[in-house]
Length: 288
Image 1 (cartoon, rainbow, N blue to C red):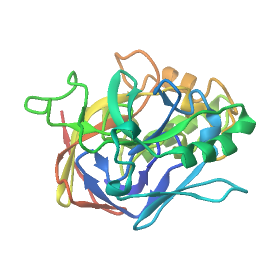
Image 2: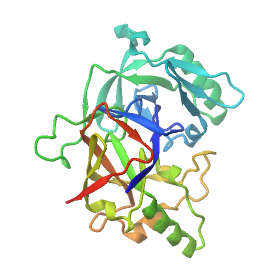
Image 3: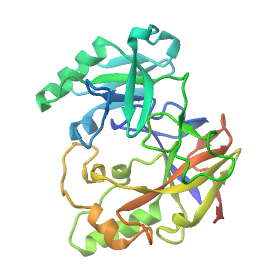
């Protein structure tokens, strides 16, 4: 089995960046979901509420992250957290799902930029915040194994450091969609970190235990239950169908015994922090 895609999403729910290599950090791929948008109450905001977030681009260089949007100057944010707002007044309590976190507010200029972009969509008052590196946001313990609770943590991802998907599973989903006269969907709908090929059976990833690559080991821990974001075109922010591919995933029963629409598997880092993942890496599979 081979890694065919690596994707990083520096700002939760904005466009991702396709990479040829990525460093593995304690919280997943370095820079992944280190930022997010919050409302006035400090609660996270995603494409679930604002589909237009899919139209905001993100780029990275050695020193800065930039948010991009047609007709707007880029908004640049330093990658060096030491240059982030340091005062307690600029630290905010924020919430992502049921997790309360401390975050560093990226300031009034970032808020004004977001207002200029999203104001025509009827959205204002969102702030860009960075995960405070001095804290830990632990992964839910229910699906971890002995010795893992308390040791596994993430930033602003929904729940786990990594999301793994299979090209074979996407092909099976698209065959099902075509058979119903529906349009195929690209892998971008599922916002994975790792995409793998060379899998001989669709949705068999539900039986994987670990993926072992050169210098790292990733643990498969929980199937990913999907929401309305997979109905949103990740280029335009539009929703071609409010029911697909959610309905088809339910029909395919990709995770037998589980209720809902599932695609992909959430993963943790068992070992290899500091290692480099590369497109083309060959992975060995251990099964439960």
